[in-house]
Length: 120
Image (cartoon, rainbow, N blue to C red; front, top):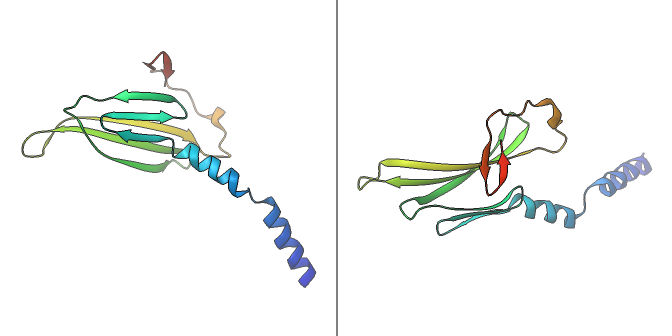
């Protein structure tokens, strides 16, 4: 019984991804930052978006969408003197979760062109 448990533990340990692989995947996940008025994405897609000085970066949120995709949103707002939102932009990045069959999702019919890249 002890040998069986030891064998199961060793097998499970060997099948886990290495810490360097985890660090690499975390680096890909944390590939978007905001500095001043510029949102920079270094991965999927690599892009820089400049926002007018009237817009203030107010934050980011991440969530899982329909158990199929990781979503990351960045919010920029222009507010009046009473801190009421006059205008707002948000940029959204999505990526399928590991193990999700991306072929079962119907592609969007509306496309956006940013820096010569088609984005649906």
